[in-house]
Image 1 (cartoon, each protein chain N blue to C red):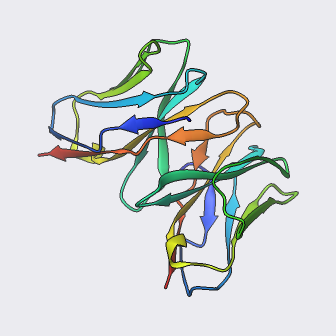
Image 2: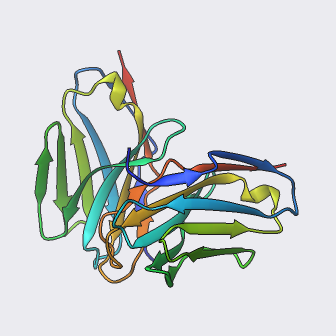
Image 3: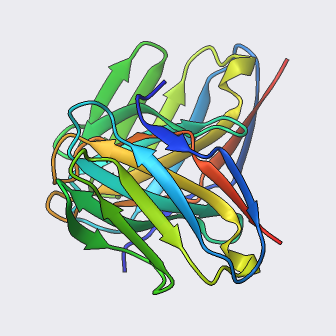
Length: 111
Length: 113
Protein backbone atom coordinates (compact mmCIF):
# COMPACT_ATOMS: atom_id res chain seq x y z
CA UNK A 1 0.00 0.00 0.00
CA UNK A 2 0.91 3.63 0.02
CA UNK A 3 3.48 4.66 2.57
CA UNK A 4 5.42 7.80 3.37
CA UNK A 5 8.42 7.61 5.70
CA UNK A 6 10.45 10.21 7.51
CA UNK A 7 13.12 10.12 10.15
CA UNK A 8 11.73 11.05 13.55
CA UNK A 9 14.24 13.59 14.83
CA UNK A 10 16.73 16.14 13.57
CA UNK A 11 18.82 18.51 15.62
CA UNK A 12 20.81 21.40 14.13
CA UNK A 13 22.57 24.52 15.37
CA UNK A 14 21.12 27.94 14.72
CA UNK A 15 22.45 29.35 11.46
CA UNK A 16 23.19 25.93 9.95
CA UNK A 17 21.17 24.33 7.18
CA UNK A 18 18.62 21.64 7.97
CA UNK A 19 17.75 18.86 5.57
CA UNK A 20 14.62 16.84 6.25
CA UNK A 21 14.13 13.73 4.16
CA UNK A 22 11.07 11.82 3.06
CA UNK A 23 10.54 8.68 1.00
CA UNK A 24 7.29 7.55 -0.52
CA UNK A 25 6.14 4.43 -2.31
CA UNK A 26 3.31 5.55 -4.58
CA UNK A 27 4.82 6.11 -8.02
CA UNK A 28 1.61 7.76 -9.21
CA UNK A 29 2.02 10.66 -6.77
CA UNK A 30 1.23 13.91 -8.47
CA UNK A 31 1.91 16.42 -5.73
CA UNK A 32 4.27 16.39 -2.77
CA UNK A 33 3.84 18.78 0.11
CA UNK A 34 5.69 19.99 3.16
CA UNK A 35 3.75 21.13 6.22
CA UNK A 36 5.01 22.58 9.49
CA UNK A 37 3.31 21.96 12.83
CA UNK A 38 4.29 24.04 15.84
CA UNK A 39 3.33 22.85 19.34
CA UNK A 40 -0.41 23.01 19.91
CA UNK A 41 -1.07 24.35 16.44
CA UNK A 42 -2.44 23.12 13.16
CA UNK A 43 -0.51 22.24 10.04
CA UNK A 44 0.88 25.17 8.10
CA UNK A 45 1.55 24.64 4.41
CA UNK A 46 5.17 25.51 3.69
CA UNK A 47 5.60 24.57 0.08
CA UNK A 48 4.73 21.95 -2.50
CA UNK A 49 6.17 20.52 -5.68
CA UNK A 50 4.59 18.85 -8.66
CA UNK A 51 5.98 15.47 -9.58
CA UNK A 52 7.25 16.74 -12.94
CA UNK A 53 9.62 19.13 -11.16
CA UNK A 54 13.06 18.37 -9.72
CA UNK A 55 13.51 21.39 -7.53
CA UNK A 56 11.63 24.32 -6.11
CA UNK A 57 13.09 27.21 -4.15
CA UNK A 58 11.10 29.57 -1.98
CA UNK A 59 13.18 31.99 0.10
CA UNK A 60 15.01 29.88 2.70
CA UNK A 61 13.29 26.67 1.60
CA UNK A 62 14.52 24.37 -1.14
CA UNK A 63 12.61 21.25 -2.12
CA UNK A 64 14.39 18.53 -4.07
CA UNK A 65 12.54 15.65 -5.68
CA UNK A 66 14.17 12.48 -6.98
CA UNK A 67 11.28 10.76 -8.63
CA UNK A 68 13.33 7.71 -9.62
CA UNK A 69 14.20 7.01 -5.99
CA UNK A 70 10.88 8.38 -4.68
CA UNK A 71 12.82 10.69 -2.38
CA UNK A 72 11.83 14.17 -1.32
CA UNK A 73 13.85 16.57 0.78
CA UNK A 74 13.31 19.95 2.39
CA UNK A 75 16.34 22.14 3.00
CA UNK A 76 16.00 25.09 5.34
CA UNK A 77 18.84 27.55 5.00
CA UNK A 78 20.05 29.62 7.96
CA UNK A 79 17.86 27.66 10.39
CA UNK A 80 16.43 29.75 13.22
CA UNK A 81 15.01 28.78 16.61
CA UNK A 82 11.57 29.65 15.25
CA UNK A 83 11.95 26.81 12.78
CA UNK A 84 11.75 24.29 15.62
CA UNK A 85 8.62 22.27 14.87
CA UNK A 86 7.42 18.99 13.39
CA UNK A 87 7.68 18.82 9.60
CA UNK A 88 5.36 16.55 7.66
CA UNK A 89 5.69 15.53 4.08
CA UNK A 90 2.56 14.39 2.27
CA UNK A 91 1.90 12.91 -1.11
CA UNK A 92 -1.23 13.27 -3.14
CA UNK A 93 -2.38 11.73 -6.36
CA UNK A 94 -4.69 13.52 -8.74
CA UNK A 95 -8.16 12.03 -8.55
CA UNK A 96 -7.74 10.19 -5.23
CA UNK A 97 -8.95 13.09 -3.09
CA UNK A 98 -6.68 12.34 -0.16
CA UNK A 99 -3.19 12.87 1.15
CA UNK A 100 -0.88 10.30 2.70
CA UNK A 101 1.17 11.90 5.42
CA UNK A 102 4.55 10.89 6.72
CA UNK A 103 5.17 10.33 10.40
CA UNK A 104 6.68 13.78 10.83
CA UNK A 105 10.24 14.87 11.64
CA UNK A 106 10.77 16.81 14.84
CA UNK A 107 13.33 19.53 14.15
CA UNK A 108 15.12 21.00 17.14
CA UNK A 109 17.22 24.09 16.59
CA UNK A 110 19.92 24.69 19.19
CA UNK A 111 20.92 28.26 19.98
CA UNK B 1 -3.89 32.05 9.71
CA UNK B 2 -5.07 29.59 7.07
CA UNK B 3 -8.65 30.90 6.93
CA UNK B 4 -10.04 27.55 8.10
CA UNK B 5 -11.80 27.74 11.46
CA UNK B 6 -12.65 24.93 13.83
CA UNK B 7 -14.70 24.87 16.99
CA UNK B 8 -14.39 24.04 19.77
CA UNK B 9 -10.66 24.26 20.39
CA UNK B 10 -10.81 21.77 23.25
CA UNK B 11 -13.40 19.19 24.21
CA UNK B 12 -13.40 16.93 27.25
CA UNK B 13 -16.04 14.25 27.55
CA UNK B 14 -16.69 10.79 28.95
CA UNK B 15 -16.68 7.38 27.33
CA UNK B 16 -19.93 6.49 25.62
CA UNK B 17 -20.81 10.10 24.85
CA UNK B 18 -21.34 11.81 21.51
CA UNK B 19 -19.70 15.02 20.31
CA UNK B 20 -19.85 17.23 17.25
CA UNK B 21 -16.87 19.06 15.83
CA UNK B 22 -17.40 21.97 13.49
CA UNK B 23 -15.34 23.32 10.61
CA UNK B 24 -15.71 26.34 8.37
CA UNK B 25 -13.60 26.20 5.20
CA UNK B 26 -11.72 29.06 3.60
CA UNK B 27 -13.90 31.40 1.63
CA UNK B 28 -14.46 29.91 -1.82
CA UNK B 29 -13.24 26.42 -0.98
CA UNK B 30 -15.67 23.65 -1.85
CA UNK B 31 -13.83 20.67 -0.39
CA UNK B 32 -13.52 19.82 3.27
CA UNK B 33 -11.31 17.06 4.66
CA UNK B 34 -11.21 15.61 8.17
CA UNK B 35 -8.09 14.11 9.74
CA UNK B 36 -7.31 12.50 13.08
CA UNK B 37 -3.90 12.96 14.67
CA UNK B 38 -2.96 10.68 17.52
CA UNK B 39 0.37 9.74 19.02
CA UNK B 40 0.28 6.11 17.94
CA UNK B 41 -1.44 6.46 14.55
CA UNK B 42 0.02 9.70 13.26
CA UNK B 43 -2.07 11.81 10.91
CA UNK B 44 -4.89 9.77 9.38
CA UNK B 45 -7.30 10.87 6.68
CA UNK B 46 -10.90 10.26 7.71
CA UNK B 47 -13.27 11.61 5.09
CA UNK B 48 -13.71 14.24 2.40
CA UNK B 49 -16.71 16.22 1.20
CA UNK B 50 -17.02 18.26 -1.94
CA UNK B 51 -19.85 20.75 -2.31
CA UNK B 52 -22.07 18.83 0.08
CA UNK B 53 -21.35 15.33 -1.19
CA UNK B 54 -19.12 12.67 0.27
CA UNK B 55 -16.16 12.13 -2.07
CA UNK B 56 -13.69 9.86 -0.30
CA UNK B 57 -13.46 7.79 2.84
CA UNK B 58 -10.32 6.90 4.68
CA UNK B 59 -9.84 5.22 8.04
CA UNK B 60 -13.11 6.42 9.48
CA UNK B 61 -14.85 4.27 12.08
CA UNK B 62 -18.53 3.41 11.73
CA UNK B 63 -19.14 5.29 15.00
CA UNK B 64 -18.01 8.47 13.23
CA UNK B 65 -19.95 10.36 10.60
CA UNK B 66 -19.69 13.69 8.86
CA UNK B 67 -21.68 16.00 6.67
CA UNK B 68 -21.22 19.20 4.72
CA UNK B 69 -24.02 21.73 4.74
CA UNK B 70 -25.24 24.04 1.93
CA UNK B 71 -23.18 26.89 3.36
CA UNK B 72 -20.17 24.53 3.03
CA UNK B 73 -19.36 24.24 6.70
CA UNK B 74 -18.86 20.69 7.89
CA UNK B 75 -19.48 18.76 11.06
CA UNK B 76 -17.80 15.59 12.27
CA UNK B 77 -19.93 13.54 14.66
CA UNK B 78 -18.21 11.09 16.98
CA UNK B 79 -20.42 8.73 18.96
CA UNK B 80 -20.03 5.96 21.56
CA UNK B 81 -16.71 7.53 22.38
CA UNK B 82 -13.84 5.38 23.61
CA UNK B 83 -10.63 6.33 25.37
CA UNK B 84 -8.73 5.65 22.14
CA UNK B 85 -10.68 8.36 20.33
CA UNK B 86 -8.74 11.00 22.25
CA UNK B 87 -6.80 12.87 19.58
CA UNK B 88 -6.46 16.08 17.64
CA UNK B 89 -9.03 16.37 14.87
CA UNK B 90 -8.11 18.60 11.98
CA UNK B 91 -10.23 19.97 9.23
CA UNK B 92 -8.68 21.11 5.96
CA UNK B 93 -10.19 22.75 2.91
CA UNK B 94 -9.25 23.14 -0.72
CA UNK B 95 -10.69 24.85 -3.76
CA UNK B 96 -11.77 21.87 -5.79
CA UNK B 97 -12.51 18.19 -5.55
CA UNK B 98 -9.15 16.85 -6.63
CA UNK B 99 -6.00 16.64 -4.58
CA UNK B 100 -5.15 20.28 -4.76
CA UNK B 101 -3.55 22.21 -1.95
CA UNK B 102 -5.17 21.68 1.41
CA UNK B 103 -5.18 24.36 4.10
CA UNK B 104 -5.55 23.16 7.66
CA UNK B 105 -7.49 24.55 10.57
CA UNK B 106 -6.05 24.82 14.10
CA UNK B 107 -7.66 21.56 15.19
CA UNK B 108 -9.96 20.40 17.98
CA UNK B 109 -8.33 18.52 20.82
CA UNK B 110 -10.69 15.81 22.07
CA UNK B 111 -10.05 14.17 25.40
CA UNK B 112 -12.18 11.18 26.36
CA UNK B 113 -12.04 10.30 30.06
